[in-house]
Length: 146
Image 1 (cartoon, helix red, strand yellow):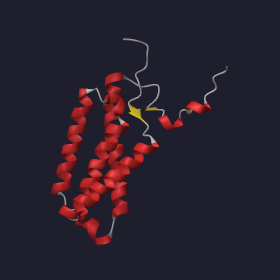
Image 2 (cartoon, helix red, strand yellow):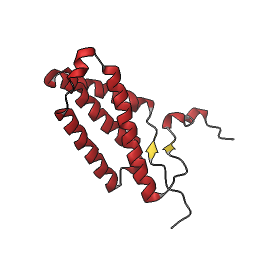
Image 3 (cartoon, rainbow, N blue to C red):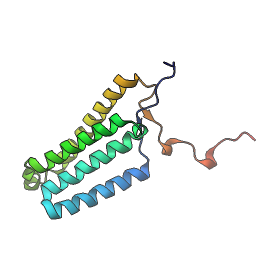
Image 4 (spheres, one colour):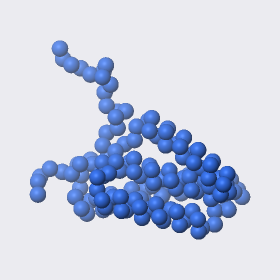
């Protein structure tokens, strides 16, 4: 056992990747809503978005088998929920803000479970989230001290 603290389990998404994910999620949601109905289609799209966002957020754990097992379980639970539950209430009152709130809670719970397993396996990291590439100094902003 080393005295080194484990690497952070999460990575802050970049601004560009956030917009790509939002655009892809919206496109998927619209496509699914065309074929499956508005409520169920948006739930399928946001479920896929939640899983993809979790993978992007947990990118430092991509080489861990346990992470992919947990992600597979999350994906299966999302698929069952999207197919088996009644999502018609989304279509009735245009409750898409509530769907966004459910998505946020969903991602928070999944990330919490991943973090809990990480802590049980590796201990407490020095930082929970790696710095975003967007927050690092640009090449032209570096002080080279020449």
